Image (cartoon, rainbow over all chains, first blue to last red; front, top):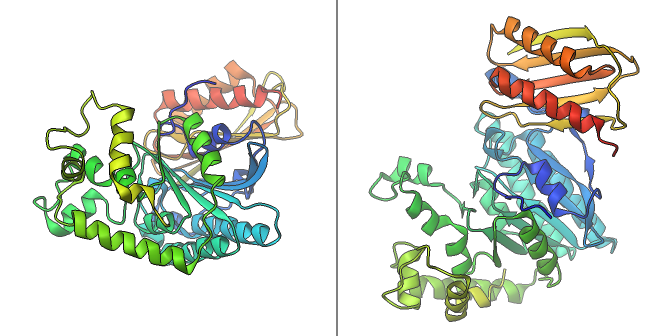
Length: 304
Length: 104
């Protein structure tokens, strides 16, 4: 298989590379031209799929439902049609799980959050998507977030991701409620210098998220690695139960106690591993990551 | 937004079995091109939707060159433009007809 960069691929091509060859069947495809009813009022171009591809296919022979956001179209933002397609696929996941037909739904999130030009519809859709994720999980579905796109995963998208049963990230991925620019706008550059890319990644990036237990797997930036990780995650279901939520709350309390005063991921690494360790250097190896994860109980008992 | 319509008579029907293809993304200096088969063997109709006004002549020239080179007969081509330069437009169109020529 060719080495395809997840970061570089379009939403459509990510799905093609993720699923079994030629197994994908799209719902409400571009030929139906269901486009944003709002963007024309702002003299902005629409996309035939409103920046999201939804449908069903096979992963390792098994039926899965998939939604993939296109981070390059308006930052993967959640508009009215975009949100409705996302909510629709999640409700289908709930129905299929309840009927015992499949327990698998994959969300290839790549979004800055709600689309400003259609904010009311977008906010509503994001809230509905959160509920739909939880409903699907309650019905027994695994909802796996795959993060590694250009736009990162922010705003309403990050809330949706956080409600998923599993999160897979590449090192390129960023996950956070507010992105660097937003934090800087409201709190100033002293709080968060959005131009400092290293700071952005060691705060919001896939490696830090994995170390802190927010992500279940850290994978290479290739479609093959995401495929492998998705298959692996689906093999360990995590039903949504009270005991799991309580364990997660306990974990987060402990995390704040241990690391609440750390400024970024690098300080956490130094505290956990050894003071001399320099985070993110070229000589950092996969073994170092594993060693670090072994020392960080957070990443082992993630209860999400 | 400006919507432009063009129709051409191509030299031949574009071979291949695919009923439709979508290439590109509506992003800065890019565009999305949706190609669909029509029953008419040699007609090629193109609709362009763009926020960048006043480039009718450039679109006309790029599309005419494309029709002459690729003979995209029997296609309806719909374009959402994100402000693509002419070279990007030509490459996306070429990519689209190549996909349509695939057997699957």
